[in-house]
Length: 371
Image (cartoon, rainbow, N blue to C red; front, side):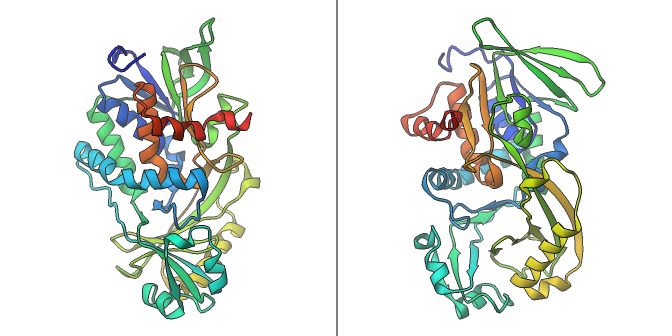
């Protein structure tokens, strides 16, 4: 089915109202499609709790995941320009560069993406991050990486852009079941609304973007939660010109001085809600090690969320085992980074407009790699 033949009035359901779901809803809405976003509790979405780093190089990604991250980083400026134009909200995209510190030059040089960054010795590290902890003797500066204010700006911008394009929302909707035709193709979604009503929504296409909860609708989908706790501090404005990405802890400063600190990685926690003393101590210890003076800055917020992880930590993108149901989940700790390329690939796939490079990229992140 090509895009010209596709009935744009036929509803496309987005199952999940987080960053990836909203991004795809916006992309489809811009193509003139009728779109409805179904979300149980959107404040659970990882896009509301992540730090907003755009860091394929600083994260030390490799192979297909690095290529996907680089493609998304390159697509970010034009994608954000669309979102900002449709919403009127500045998303605070900043190519500020990211510094990764190391205890020795040998550790620095062994980093998977070392060749793509600028090598720093101790004086260079102090110049980029004044006040950095004494244990760090070397570093890498990835000037091509950056950040975006996902929590306060991008998520809200996508909400406004989507509603302006006529995208419909059902908040508090708990999807119960996917109905299929006799030939196996997706036919409808059964849900319980926020008011407790059972509803059946017919659809020929839906996108599964439920994040860590995606496996609840497709039981054999290899997606599981990895809990992360975070906090923020009120820092002096421009205390950090770069993002500081240390082992286990990172510091991301916004324009108004708010310093986002993350994040624990608790695979054993499952969907257990709440902050823990152990997790909060880990964050505090990370702050003291990376930037000792920051341990005296006042804490503002503490929160937690659940990353959608897969066995190889790569996303699930493209067709699912159910014809008509598309996958856009499993982004683990790189959901913000991969939002731009996810919307590009999924929208092109649904509209049957993939070019060969896009098709190859989707093939690399098919669910079939785990079969």
